[in-house]
Length: 409
Image (cartoon, rainbow, N blue to C red):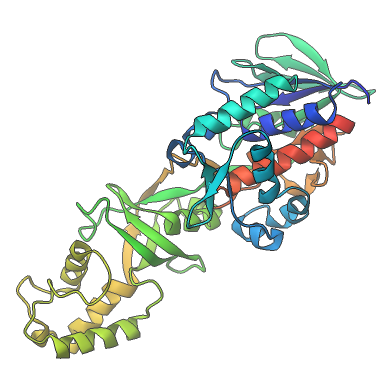
């Protein structure tokens, strides 16, 4: 094999995986990884509350791509070459056993992200990858006969045969500017996977309460999702909200994160069905107080707030509930509207949509279609997945494909 010099910009999941794949596929290659900060694999460290949600137990590529608001079509072929089953086998072959939780998320059996960081760092070192931290890439100049002259943030210049950008999403402005300079189109990055700010008396002081299955939708759009919903100090979060924010990333950005959210606290139960159930409750429990007699499986304190929001007074009994009030309660339960006034990024999963336009990249090799010798992996591309290990899986897949391709050249 030839002895190429490969430079990798970005010390995150995609960068490390690409560096290792390249070095293992071609031991003759000189693989240099540059990380601009002093903390490589920082996002791996905080993912999943410090446990690291490595991947998801979804092994059918056509199902897997449905979890990607952007990039699913391009990833279909990529996942046929490297998918969660391969990720699991890769880590297990290097001493890291993964476990699957009830919702399909996969974590190291140790429940510690340090296990993943130690594995990637150890394997990179043993395979000959040279990692340099607190040193980023400042400029890139293509060389006419092939390769690049790379200027580091330290002021040094170094020549490489192949160059990979794996600098992540929202904090990758420098790499995106360089990619643009090298001929690429950049889709503007905007946040994905965020929580909603809602100041509403129905939710106040209920932080920590959750509903196992709720329906959420953005009024006057087609955006809707289903799943667990969590009340927070600032509004609403949980998988249902995070998925909604991912699929609606660009639309909600265009609204400046100010819109009306409809919440069905009963999951898939319609207002008409809810009203019928409430009518049955009214008949069967005529002398019971509405506020204390909750016929649905939801937190009692939330029930009290929602019926109060419909107009139920503290001492009202079921027999005194009019049909009109019954309909109002049903609406609060299954189609309540809440004004969203802003967002907060999900701390465990800082994700953006946007980045290098996907049509300009060959997803068999992750090589640029417009600048030979330039490769991309991870969130620097216009790819993002919903929460649950899908963003890491895209990083492992694109990193592995890029590393394999750069080893051969």
